Image (tube, rainbow, N blue to C red; front, side, top):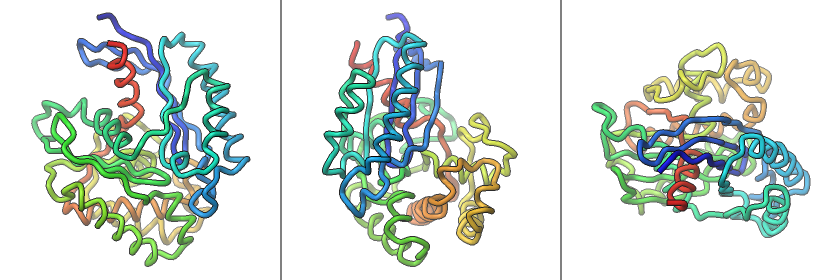
Length: 307
């Protein structure tokens, strides 16, 4: 089978991301043509109101219009659009679905937390298979804006669970109350542990913007560098140091951090707390950071559907 040009969109609580890539199912190679991210904060207020805000929908639709032009420009043969936590929770998700369909011509798939976990695992671990030192079983966690997915597996998924802790949800629910956030996170991890053995992995792999941003800070990068961050290993103590710094910093100080996206300034402290709690609960001494995640898993799922 020849390579396929596909497009994948991951629409989460805080950001919407696009990947256009050439995939070779025979060699397992994925070659990026365009990979981009836009902070749209689709989940603005959803935890409180149960609805997607009109301004959040418009920000998301504006990004979709931009992505439609990119997809057409590259001539992608197939597109899959996956929506996660915020649109799962919203009473008016039909408005979101109709808007995306009108702009991109595909039905957005509002997937379950378990489906989200499986796609994240596939995207994050495909490159790790066969590594001499990053050995299975892998515990992959995808720390999003509204939820965090945990999935344990080797070359296949053994257990998966999604829980409602994420950087946006924790910030909106608790503001700056660190103790309340810690208690909420601990309860969610107890819930996750009923399904996924959180201490049963040889390699802990972290995904998504909070994790990659904390990694960039820990590595003291002068600018965001995907190549430097991808598969970096961040010790537990370094995550503690970065978390303490972020919680103590003013918004202006956080905004001045070289790797910080402006859309993460107000939620990165809560996200770092979730990350630290996961590492402490799992007993991991270090975190392996992956820039390849659910977006790559979505792209591979398009190829699998076509085969």
